[in-house]
Length: 191
Image (tube, rainbow, N blue to C red):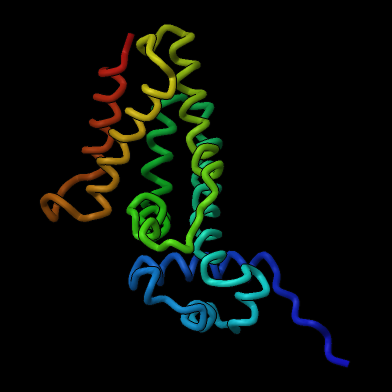
């Protein structure tokens, strides 16, 4: 009697990474489960076994991206707002395809993909906590925490998105631009 095939977490992570890259390159409508399985060196039955189907795979890609992003933010949280900002860019540069999928809107038009709103909300919690802490310490302006956090997120997101889109001069020093932007954000929200 043959042993059942075991699909482990390593294969799951490989499929998520491959799917993110293929979807980023070709778009969600053009990527098939066969494409994902082939690129990961496995079978479509493994994809079905681990995810259930294409819409569940797409949802898992985005949800896993937000969990990974949240983990990077949690790891940097003790360093305050500046450390969170540095971790934001670092994560985005290390996960370019995933970042574009999470924030670029490619999956928004794909009706079968229903990311978990809690995953995105959880990813923002370290920033919310850092803003609240900085306000309590008198370092940031006294304004609604969510307003300040979303505004800060938008500012750093804009710079990172421009970098990933390769806007500007080919020899642009994006690291310097980003650090200057973080400094400007801190000054702009200072109490």
